[in-house]
Image (cartoon, rainbow, N blue to C red; front, top):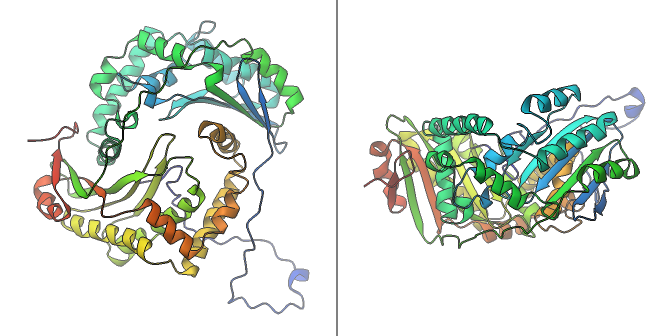
Length: 479
């Protein structure tokens, strides 16, 4: 399973940075190349400064100046996503797909042509907690790009012709996912961990087929308002230059009451249980050991990132070393925390041959237990700290990533200095601190084991871990 936000990168932390060395650098120096140089302490404040402004209508604007390229990136975030779908899961995704497919002032074709002229694309996507629109262009096109983004966010028309096309694509994707073990695994993990909570309500062919034009219009009218949104600007442009253009594009955007998220309690996971999707003909099993995880604003998330990297962050992670290098059971094994606004999840995953499914689960549980019971060796932990800090600092080169982080402070209620102390916090993880972090968020006694594979080959071996519930590829319980 491939990580995302805290689903760690697949890059190996044991990388080498090459630089140019001149004769004067080494002349007369006694260099012992068998000793690894000290990397030094992490920067105390590496995150860029930003302006935080609010328009009279409530739209919060973040401006980050970056003069390295004559470019500007805009990212608009509406603080409602798929968890606000309510009765028809899949609605938010269709809304996002159609924002650039025709507005009150531009046809879909005209919108596309204007985007091409600017050398840009206004792209939108809906996640669990928010819907985002993002676009970049040369800074000389700032006003035109803002006008295009504002039109997409404020004036979509959701034409029936465009909805029909998008609905067919969505239904085709849902049908294809029934044949994709990884997709089935991810869906069942969400269902098991989140239950009836909005995070656990996933799009189905039935829900998508029931979505009509008025559903999209109603969702947009309910959630797309300036007090429920933020706009981030990253690029070679000053606040004095860009703010009048933002006010022109978004200043007349009107507010309305935002519906509250219809939440429900998360299922309580006690003991061990096994959830098996029967996929006849499978010669391998997709495994996920999962449980609830921290929310996005949990104070120790920088430490959690180092913990996750140590367990399953790629080639140097313990899961990879155990299941692949030691046993040769899998191509790769990973772990991931998925922290969201209301709740989060954890999973450790691998793909194995049917005959070693149960032993692989045993080894995953063993590695999780080991982190809870034993402090990690300092040498291993140092490698993970350096990797995570370096990865974070490199990511600051990406304008869209910087925009997202600034907006995440508002979206998830993070401390204002969260990213300024991020690298230092990761650099301060000690063996005892990581063990305490593992004990706070991991527990193999209360956990779910989710598997996609051939039930007749693996069900009996999985019964050793707990009661087994079998599902079909529609994720319905089989009798």
